[in-house]
Amino acid sequence: MKDNKSIKIPTPAAIVLVILLAASSFYAGISWIKNKAPASSNITKTTPGGAVFTAQKADKPQLDFYVMAFCPFGNQIEETLRPVFDLIGEKAVIQPHYIFDKIANLEADCKTRSGDVTNCKLYVENKYFTTEAECKKVISKNYADCTNGNNYIKSSTGTFYSSLHGRVEANQNVRELCAWKLSDNKLTWWNFVDNVNKNCDSKNADTCWEDQAKKAGLDTAKITECFNKDGISLIEAEIALTEKNKISGSPTVLINDVNFPPETAYTQDGKGTLKIGKKEYSQADFRTPNVLKEAVCASFKKAPSECSKTIEATATQNAAASAGGCQ
Image (cartoon, rainbow, N blue to C red):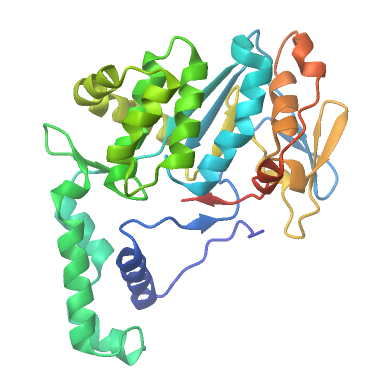
């Protein structure tokens, strides 16, 4: 696990890092270690390496999870939360949210992202490139790709919106938001997302998603209409939430506005523990279905009978317990 100290990269290295990421995949995903600042201070530190989840009680708890459509760690948390939804159903709200970038000045933003050709001599001296010609070619291509409006969702006012893994992911984020909005029975949304995660990716989702939606029982014409009519307002609403709750990575989970698992539960040696009620869980289990179920159930004023049941994790869901993410 990484600590809370920020890591500063010298300017040439930082720029070349952006270049190399862009060269491999436009706005490629970056692995991260653990969620950033907790959304609530309702976390009590106990012994070293241990923490207590102090649940905020509600008649109908709400778990909000923030993801990107094709962040692999976001897909893992969706798979992990699915059996929690299947068990508790709509006695609690388990709601998806999506992380977008908003770009008011595309050219200025891309100059920062793409690097500066006037520094190519320095980059070559530091062995980031073999020749100045190669450096200039890469930077010029990345700038051209970055300033290509087709790589973004664009509002009528000229504001650009993106998602970490590119335009197709941004499109799918909106489609999944629309599907959630249009689904009276949220089971159809979960089936849709499960289908997309298994059969589509950030390159083909624009042509792949319709079959997956139809298999889930969704009206694709209504999703398309929602995308065209309400897409920008949905994006803006998500950006407002991510800013309000200081969301910095996918996945991030809030239960009644309390960050879960809490930052204080993690230790660098991987031996952190977390108490939920009278039960204590190890760091390796924080993102397993049963622990997430326990956290939701602890947040009921009166827990339903389903909370007494244990959810056995699959091998894939156990793998999702790793505290990785996209930022």
